[in-house]
Length: 267
Image (cartoon, rainbow, N blue to C red; front, side, top):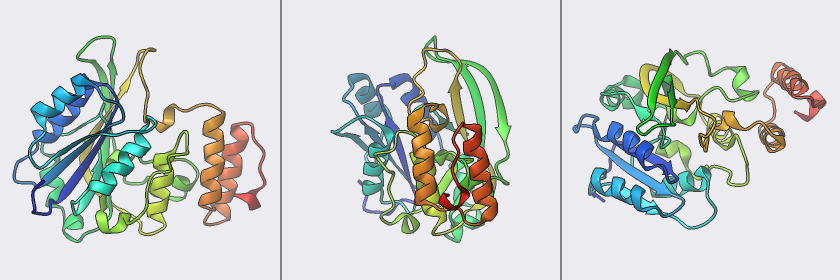
């Protein structure tokens, strides 16, 4: 890797989805070359097609790691964090993509120049993955400017792909590899305990959502709808107690909607 410290380290966890990975990496590599950026692709299983995509698209300042251990994005992201040398860390799931020119706009924003923790806007795009490449269906641009409020301590409102995190802020904070769902939310709350982010009004990431039943929803926290997800909610609440009575009451009401009664003083 280059001895110069890049402005951005982009961590891309992946799992045997070469066509989607290629789209994600192309969206990074099509950003203006003047923005210093290292890409760290971490695969949780060896796959020749993924290797070929990385061979074609990654440069000498990038990394492609095929790690050992159980599959899952948390361990892959953690390994990426251990290796990231950039002043800022960004995450991009292998099935998502960045808007053209986004990195240059972000790099020149006053909040980045001031080394602030920031979040930006996103577009949700629906697609069918019954064909390769996926077939576009629809999209909706979202303004996330009001998402950092008390409700973020009740349920997740910010995907980690809309965050630009100063490396100095991350420190030893890592994703909890024992969680079955919402590990990205717990990671965010751990960062919020240190510093609140500021909103940057840029459309940064396109978050693709598949609309066919056979799709692998790997790494998408909002896809978990089982007992493990409920247990993870309770786990997050215990690790990050409600900041005030309003948050605790909202947590009680939210759990009641899921069919669980828990006293507010435990949340």
